[in-house]
Image (cartoon, rainbow, N blue to C red):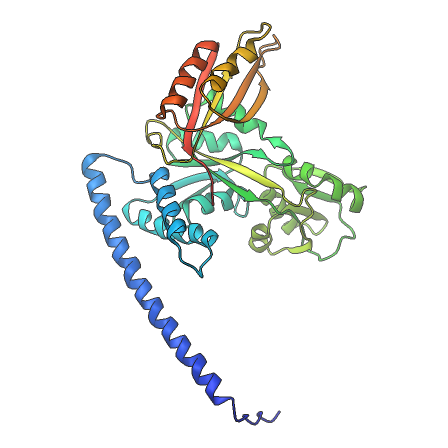
Length: 373
């Protein structure tokens, strides 16, 4: 094919584009120099922390940094883009001080992995685990500095196993993050025909119940330990399909046969970031905090009402209230409660002390900056 004859006006736009690209390249070099300058300062901070014995990761400090940058952002960069950019910058700087090991439900390609990377940035040592129990065990034993576990889904409610494990381990919550969960049907063959079974975590199967009932009514729904494990199995067997995210499709070389099959278009999962209190202190107030509790009360009339009175009296808002059977055989329950605020705030601290007195069992699961990005 013959070359196109240049039009008279082609040269000027091409020269203008070249000049703009050169200016962008120059800004990129300036950014790189500034990032290295920041990294150098982070190393100096790390040395000071070592001398005073303080921890590298402070979630409340990082939340305050990001909030301040978003408030000062003049644009045109969108404020919602600030958080992920700076989380990666801070992640890379933290990794210069010491590698951070983070446990989550694996294998590669799970939403838990995505949540871990979104909270800590990609400069971490990934510790994929086979179950939620293993995430808690690994973090408790110190094989990971932190764990990331799902605790609540906007469609299916609480993740019961995660909540139960807080009762039997010393771990506590130091952060939270949430994801919009988009489930895709994945398969080696780009076709709905001939699927023998759909493999996914039970929560994902439940979140896609309507779509599966309509499009694959006679196909077996096979629960597995994670969505990524389902994708791994589907990558080995053309007769299987999986429900998982785009990351899993890329990881295991699968086709997205049907995108976004979740019943709720706004399906979101909330994740807790957990650690051992002997290795990490509770975050200090950030200005927008949540305190999570688990409590129980005597099985008598009015006990639950009396338990909640201190929160009302001291003007403390409750944002979540869930019950779980105590498995004592006596129809007793544990109540999982989230309240707004930090115990260092006088009204919150006073309310918690009064609440403790009204409870037969009382445990603070953690106080942490809420997810605002």
